[in-house]
Each structure stands twice: as structure tokens, then as C-alpha cells.
Image 1 (tube, rainbow, N blue to C red):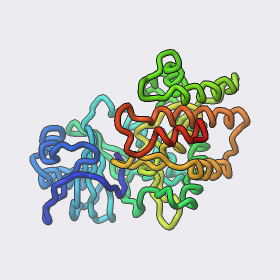
Image 2 (spheres, rainbow, N blue to C red; image 1 turned 120 degrees about the vertical axis):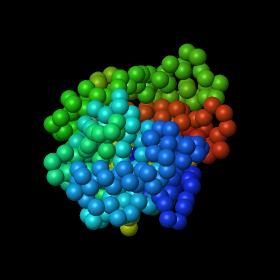
Image 3 (cartoon, rainbow, N blue to C red; image 1 turned 30 degrees about the vertical axis):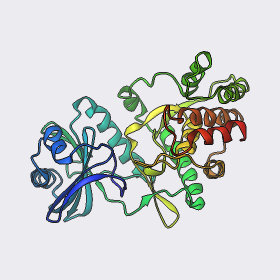
Length: 338
């Protein structure tokens, strides 16, 4: 979850109380607020936040407009004496060490001039607070909207922004701390798809697997360097205004892999938002890559892996049942030129 403008949520709204909304789920938000987060209603959550933000950040909360929940995380949009901020908290104790590490990573990226949603530092110098069984952080609200892939200028800029972000992530001095709190990723993208060669799943046409196998046969044997990555590059996490990316948000899925893997995954999933998960055209993917290479040209071995990974992610996105947005057709265009 992240501090941004978003669409597609479900919620209950009262004109004088915080709107309670679910980002992804169809659960009743008042029930979720009470059972997962321990607050009887939006007013109770607002009172709790007002006390913590005032005590630890020295900021007066003037109003709380809405609270959005997803899994064990919540966001609250606040008007304060320090401007509009978003309070972000988690009740997943087993994730606190990782969330704290990623909050500090975000603060470091902001200090390097990267367009991220920087945490508001408390007078104590901390970027987050652990109290009452929650981990809480504040971020400035970003006046921007998720990327529209129909805006090719913004798509090109998104590629360039990702390349610059990759450069900084590769140089992060506390990479080891993030690695220590990052779960084992399991099989790689290529390993997941090549496992299908022996026993093709019924929803993936064999000609598509054969086409990917041919690409994989041409992949370079030399390993490509692995580095720290954003982890979830797509439209919902690329906030834009006036055709430019203003912020790359939501580093909670940060992971370790090759830069070209994230570039390919991002290119395939670039158009996805909340409840809108459709593919993009080859032209959009090419524009995204072109923007990336204005800042960080792919090495020859990375360029060869690009074709493999775009094909692999195209297959992984084909749903096992209904396919209302056309992922299978997009994979056919990518792998067969259909």
C-alpha cells in the first residue's frame, strides 16, 4: 500500500467522519478496522492517530479524510499543521523489521534526489515509530495520479526514472540490512516457466511454450548481476503529473534480482492498477524500454534476456480461467507475432 491517489476501492463514507475503504478486498471496512486494527470506528482511529502524531512528530492533526486498508496495512489521509500528510501503519509484527528497513531505504533514496514518497522525519530523527503493536510512519501526500499508458511521453519518462532508481538501489550502502529481512524469493521467473515445459498447464497453449523455449535456448550462459530492486513497477506505483513521473511509490515488495528482470516485468505489467489488470501493446513496452536505455543502456547479454523475460512474464499473466482483458492474445502477439 502507498500514499497516493487511487481508484477502484470500496468504502463507506460519512460526510463528517473519515471514509473507511478497502483497497483490494470486498470485506466490510468498519469490521476490518475493528477486527484487524483494533478501532471501533473511523473517529476512534482518528483520535488514536492524532495523539501519536502530535506526541512523536510534534504535528497537530486538523482533519482525517479517509482511511484505506489492505491486509494488515492501513493508510490515513490527514490535514495537519505541517500540510497534507499520509499516516501509514502496519499491525503485522513479523514484518516490522522489513518495513523499518524499507522506510529507511526510502528516506535514503529521497536524500539522493530520487522521486519517492519520503517519510517525514520525527524530531528524534526517526523515520518510523513502533508502538501499541503497530509500526507507523508519515509521508507527504503526492499530488499526482497513476500512470496512463496512453501517454507515451510519461511511459518513456517512467523508463528513464526506473533506470536512475536502479542505479541508486545498486549503490545503497545498507543493502545487507534489506537482504537480511527479504524472504527467500523461491524459483526465478525463468525457472517457474521452464517447469511448464515438462507438464504444460492446460491454460497455456503449447505453441507459446515452444516459442519461449526457443528464446531460452538463445539466452546467454553468463550470469547477469543481481541487485536490489523496487519489486512492483506498474502504473499504480508510478504517480504522474503533466506527463512526467512525480514519484515511484510502494517499495514494500523490494527484492533482489537482475535489473533486466524488473524492466521486463514492469514492461509487461505497466498498465496494471488496483482492479484493472490488462496488458499493454508492444509499442508501449518498447517505449518504456527506450526511456530506460536513455539512462542505462542494456548490456548485450541483458538485451538477450529481455526477450526471454518479456515472453516469460507474458505467459505467467495468462489467467487459468476467464481472460477478460486479453492476456493470452497479448502473449500470442509477443511470442508468435499473431
